[in-house]
Length: 202
Figure (spheres, rainbow, N blue to C red):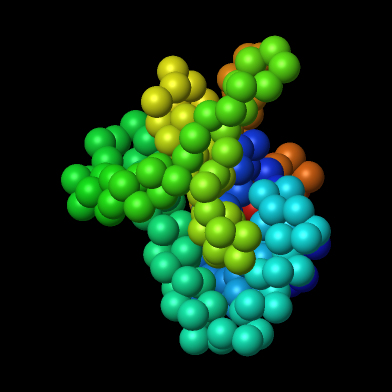
């Protein structure tokens, strides 16, 4: 699937990153971020990086392919750590200490590179990372997950019963059930209707 066609139903940056694979309910899943250019294109689509950074990182991924492959592997490993953490939260279970330890390692690796700058009306965050650093992609994702984990909104994190994607329920009544009504919701309702209409075999 093209990066431009991936559904963005997570409602939070970190959850959209977690959902960058096909249905998690299946043993065999389609990986959407197969290459470093895929990850870079995804980051550009989510406006994590700008067009200039996209160009710089794309050129770097071609010139230094081994480094790109290594970083992509690390990025996907981090994605799966996020998945395990937020899936546990969605299921109202405790997060396994192993995943929390791995998450904290990422915090230690990235947060020394963050600083606040005063702007009109308040403050903004800035990352002290080299212009050609792949970390520019993961840093905002990590920060978004950190803010969500420390918030009082964790009950809004849910798991789609149809595909297993995680999403942030921002509805007023808090009764959103599927990651997408257009995709999973309509499919489930159509299947329910089919079974209701099907006559019993005599």
